[in-house]
Image 1 (cartoon, rainbow, N blue to C red):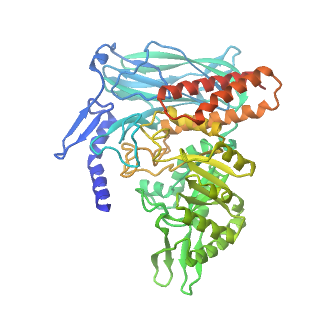
Image 2 (image 1 turned 90 degrees about the horizontal axis):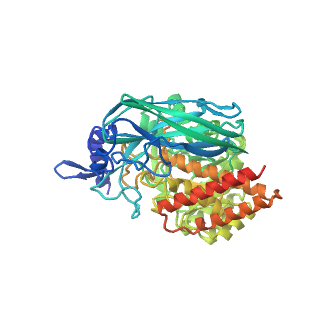
Image 3 (image 1 turned 45 degrees about the vertical axis):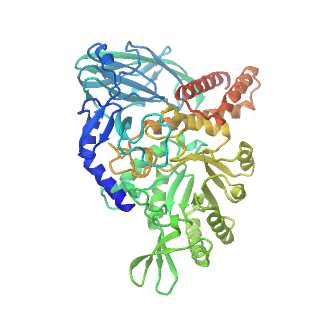
Length: 604
């Protein structure tokens, strides 16, 4: 198996120059190509784009507002009216609203650039262009086609590859090859102190073959969305800081590494990230990533048989994450590594030693009781004990129950989080329970947990195929996740992983083991993605729904209560959705957004 994986990685390295040409737009028939990898090292690019449609397009620059809920393929004429049409959106103070601007042309364009302007309302109030941001959306290679439904926990067809728009990068200007498309993500962060009202503005798109002006209108409502740090939504994206030092080839935990980490974590903090991922042991997930999860607490077995624990890396990472605003919870993984494999330094030899400590064994209990005593003393001294969870992930029931028993025998004060299938026998044992979508507790079980002060979340991973946040997933699914969490009564959402990058993530999102994008949400350099921003939109929706629901109790306005009942009825199908047709999801979310906007006008 290892030889096979090594061969696949070598093949990826060989193909990188070809993929680079794809990314830079230097190969014709780019969009949604099927890349047939022949044994003779020949490559054929097949494109579904209709040449007749390009022939019918007028020469020169075309630019228009599109939709953030769907993707625009590289060589396919977008189904958008190129005549300037006003884009309209409604948002709260403190909210980020997003749009997609699509640029295309039947012939080559040079010097494509955007000119932003301030927004103004009838009273002369201004939304400054300083609150706006543009990101060029780059295409990356995927191992499944758009909207794939037959996804397994694997890499997809070995003889096919597809281009998908996903990766964000800032830009000044760009050139556009003929018969191609380039999406640009446009964001406006409405200031918390903005005056309510309707603001009008324009974006000017310039090129060497014409200029287009795009009008748009923003309605700012008199409601305030708190800063992401204060959102109630429990977002837990697992991080691996070792990825950063490995990717950039810098010394682990050097000042350079920590500077890169701060930028890298900013996106997570800005989406309301709550949990800091840490590792008590080395490589807990059986070395299934390109970069292993490095242990943050070094275990040393002294010559006399006693144990010493070094928390220096753990302390540095937690403190750094907290400085970026991720400070609500710390998860320490894990009492049960895959294969029950534990690594420690043998002081007598100076070597690393690997041993198997089965959770049902006396060795496991003895060693973990010693560690937990030392760990608790350390956490209490710093003031982190009350926000720390011991994390267990997708382990067999016997192992899980044995580990929990050992933890509880040490102290009932430890908080435990578990990610995996729903098991009623674990319910009362877990402070935080995260279940994989489709293998969840009933809504009443979630409600009961909340009444006992326990939190409940859900996650998606390499399953299910839909809904998900793969590179090839329709973007609307990312926003849907937040609505599902609210409708079901969950406290939040978990995803492995934030940053488990494959070999060349900026060009090729494929992993040798998992579907494209399954193992990461953001890109090197602190680059966001369509998937990440759509997930963030759904979290913001969750917060708005939560705030409006809390105001229902205080309101005596029959119209408001009637609208709230309509919203509750609208939410019910979210909990039973099975088909996940893209158009239906877009309609459901649009209707939900309209109800939020109406309710926001009715309540103070």
